[in-house]
Amino acid sequence: MTLQAPASVASDRTFSDRLAAARDGLAARDADALLLGIGSDLRYLTGYAAHPTERLTLLVLPSHGTPALIAPRLEALAAAASPAGVAGDVEVVAWDETDDPATVVAQRLRTALGEAPAGRLLVDRGLWGMHVLALQRELPGSAFGLATEVTRELRIVKGADEIERLRAAAHAADRVIDQVTHGPLVGRTEADVSREIGERLVAEGHQVAAFAIVASGPNSASPHHAASRRVIQPGEPIVLDIGGTLDGYCSDITRTVWVTGGIAANAPSDEFLTVYELVRAANAAATAAVRPDAACEGLDELARRIIRDGGYGDAFIHRLGHGIGLDGHEDPYLVADSAEALGPGMAFSIEPGIYLDGRFGVRIEDIVVCGAGGPDVLNEAPRELLVVDG
Image (cartoon, rainbow, N blue to C red; front, side, top):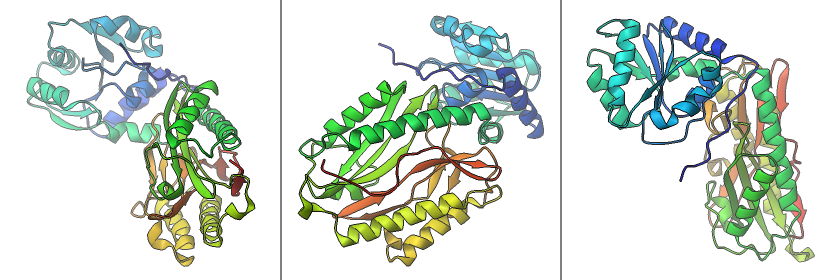
């Protein structure tokens, strides 16, 4: 049984343009070829959303010569039907079950680069170790590095079409948050609510519902809590962190709600309200500070300082945010040791949180794009505390 692959990636920048830009990146880094296996880099450069499999599929982009998409014979038609394949930007080279695909790759490189290529080959960081070892065996004179030397720079700035796909994914997730928070919650298990979220994400257009964290009561103090059989009780918070992929691009939103069960005495405590407002203020301040040339570590410190000054600095236990695009987590990272400056078109989460072990947690997360004049906030779900009957 095969798994559904993510949607192929369309773009207002052609795949031919992307391949040419990657080849320019190879020249700038004195590298001879880019070798990309199944994953987001392959989708970015060719639009090919290959099925995850142990059989080697590899884009071979040499510094000169025709790019090749090396694929197992049973996947060759799908590879040829990819946008880059249809446009003739890559030549599809099929290998049979009795072939050694590493040998096929090595032969392709020798044809493009010469009989004994001995330069630098940049390999996809997600390529399986067995494939990397086989390539090293077939190309003993080559030095291997990471493809991110080239692909990071290409992907970190999103084009206008990519931003609109991220916006569509964000709005779909917004709608799911609204639907779930106004539906029945009290008396249900976290796992049941999580299942509903996944179904609603797909109903709102997502091809894949990647995660649906439902962390109630004391579980809300665990940032990556796995939805459990715990029954949601009145008079407690629920952290909802949900996301998936729509048209190949990712959504990711977190909202924290409080359920009362319809009983006034179950209203949130003063301390919870204080914590919530600190997190909301940190989210708002960091978002407002987004602009070109703002340092990632500066945004992290701005949010962290608000929480620290409120007396909960030790309870903000993760970075402020992560990049997002074809992957749910990618560059840039908004973290204390990153002096990287933001640039127009960079997309990332802003998600401060406070977590009090055994008691409760609060997180508010939005996807934000750095615009030429400031922040472009993709999520529109309210950030004020939502107190519901549940």
